[in-house]
Length: 100
Image 1 (cartoon, rainbow, N blue to C red):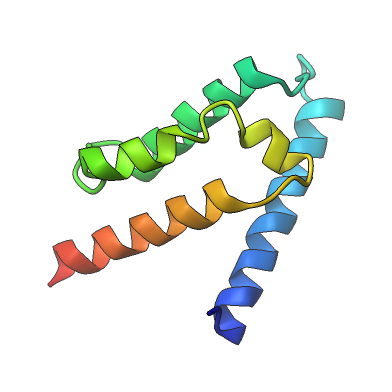
Image 2: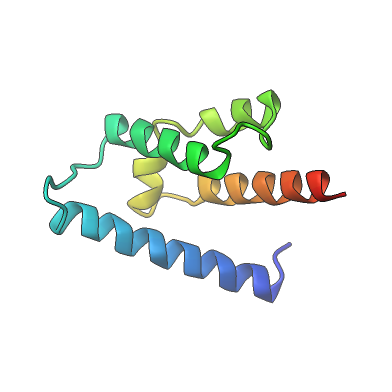
């Protein structure tokens, strides 16, 4: 069940991702063709940026996220939104756990 605030945050994240995708396709100095290879690169960068020091995500978390490694491009093309939802959920949970 998603709260109104959570839904608004999800919509904002989706909108930002869509803008980033379009920018990378059209305006980047080396335009990106989204496929499984670029999906894996984006996945790695996303996880690294969220947990650069490897303090938050557990092995179990990474195992759950790694299922999406070759699917991020599909999600950016409008086929679901599970990776971004799950990564945000796991990250927030890890922050709460370390803050306690």
